[in-house]
Image (cartoon, rainbow, N blue to C red; front, side, top):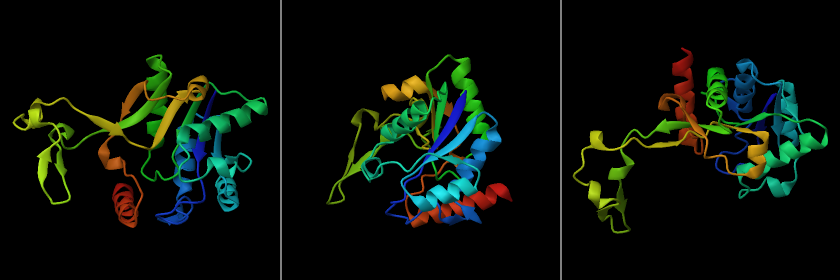
Length: 225
């Protein structure tokens, strides 16, 4: 059986209350909940939060919600994996076990339900224990520059200063939208050694600033028009 766990704390700093702020007509977390439910691969779609308002809104949007998690697992420095481990342990104490657990980030308005079902299929077909979505860098990172405080440029990898971009190996980055792993794999802790599900960069945006938010709204409206 499969479960989706959406971690959504209340203390976002750069964009206040961003997990439940209105985004194109609905609370932001609603898009993650909808994508999970529409994918058809989850027996449960759950939210873990430290915030009562997020708890209530998530329930109203059709998600199940775990009891409010400890503040020690909800500050600015808490990594993702311990939060998912806490959720899995809480479910286990209630007698529930899930073969595959998908952590879905709460701010993913461009996520398609097909991404969740297709990535699960990829993971299971290849017999992997984990799967994360990745995007290809649009510019070769091997030809990156450093710029110091005096605006002086230097090469990060001088050996590639004359290498043509098309001759360089492709590089990818974590799309930061969701992550699949078996329940046991999450409890071990390191999930970034499985298989990669490649997503188009046009449907991936990291929303950390007001500019990111505005750009995401523009992209969302373009995709839905």
